[in-house]
Image (cartoon, rainbow, N blue to C red; front, top):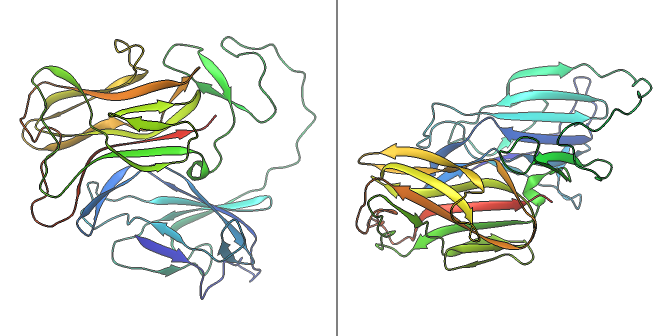
Length: 322
């Protein structure tokens, strides 16, 4: 990880004024990279940090840093990545593109263009005019809702929507983060020819959702709306494959459109990112994968045999947004 800080520097305007506001950092894509002997995944999850008197601070007002994955080098699976950093100060904002090659850390922010390859000033918007008369609700706009809420899709059916609270900084919302973890030199398990199997998930990395739990590869969740940060099946030589997320009450109909992939003789991660689903009542969900080929012992991942570290194969993170 690369540390972005303001220990010896200050975020200031062109005329030297120390700035107060927010910085919102959003990856421009999804990529993987190597950190030591561990393969890491970067997802499009925003990070929001306050700026007070030109310094990065946490929610208690204490000095803090931002830790970001490198955008190139370190065994990347893409040519390059980047972060879009939006600085907001009162009625003005600036957008910068940050490229962070591996190997240089920490980096100080000495101005709003220090780390940028491009920087664009956004012209403040003029005063709002008087609001017009409210129109009629359109097709698919549900009744009720409260001020500030947003419409969110429940599934792929046209006009099937629900009112939800805006996510804000999704990193602070309740979430459950799971993975399939085995000990050193223990494989991930077998896949079976032309068969849909439950994706193994046996380890809770994080759980801040009241009422959520993991039992026998299945995840029990309270009623609510969920954002799928990622739900990934780690597979070896599956041939064609299809990953689906189900409510266990209906294993014939996925609650999210299935995702497909193909790999004839190598490892592949197949899954879904950024989808949203709603559970009207508490329910249990399960990640399943169908594979065209079957591989004994190694189908869900080959074992680490070159050091004493655990293996991490399939993984899933769900965020409760409403």
